Image (cartoon, rainbow, N blue to C red):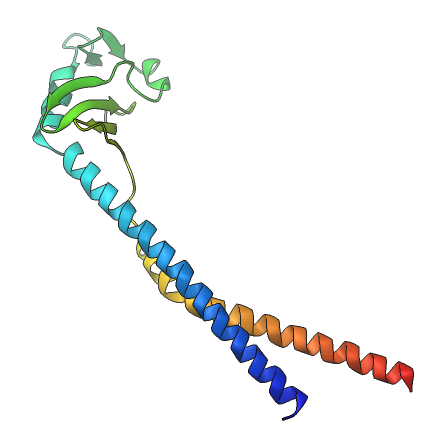
Length: 169
């Protein structure tokens, strides 16, 4: 077996190691995607529940005189000046429908829900298609990265060895 054939086989071996590493990364990404999707679904179900909708309409009402939103619980005018803060000053404590507390964003959307069992649910994005695609591509990326690195190292090593052979002659 020649040195070029041996280097090619070694590069394939490194490529297979890259596939294994890429598969491991894909598995980790899959776990993150499943967790993020479950958190998004749970938060979305509670944030769009009837209990939260009733609390929003009860707590935030338009002032008939000015047309601006009023926070009934704290007698706080939700105006442009008040919207500079991220959340409403006081969360809604409702203890209904499995929800114990709701934090509001400045646009009066739900930012966080605390359940009766103490779990904090934050607004999370649903995983995009690109994350699923990337998860499938990771093993191929691992193969080509490790295979390419081995080929480049073999090329440079051969070049260096050839240079030493020339200088010793």
